[in-house]
Length: 189
Image (cartoon, rainbow, N blue to C red; front, top):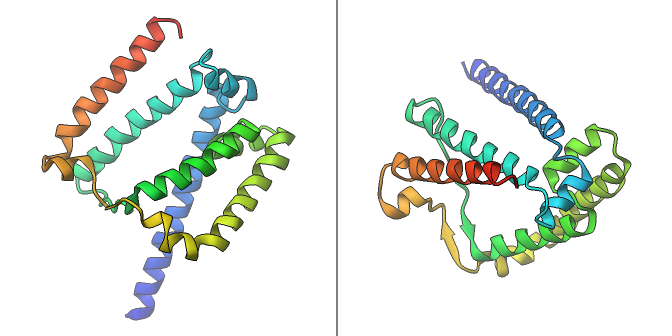
């Protein structure tokens, strides 16, 4: 019996990896088709002259938020939010920001740009991810005892904080995001 359980667990893990790869490929393709893997588009977003990236990301947040909470409501998935803290957010934001400022790509757009064959993303982006992850991993023990613990708020989510059903937060958030996207589009931004 234990061998059969191990095989079933391995099969589920492999299935999850295959689904993750498939969704990653589709996401990368859509990033490419939307233009979010182009350096000029990303720089335009940072200069507030081209809102393509914002539109793509907010559309993904809207779709993902509704999809995840619908699957949760149907009992198809169980969510396990990671613990968070102000310190983790600051350190992560700084690492992300420095990489973005130096190269003009975020991790998702680096993967898409590498898939498009952009050498700057391959050389700088992949190197930056590997070096940054290595430095963070090497310093993690010290960081986790210090700054990463500052302002710890656990696995708190807005519905838990407000003590309401998930949909009481999801529906208004979805409406606000949708209206904001509509406004950006009609304003020609």
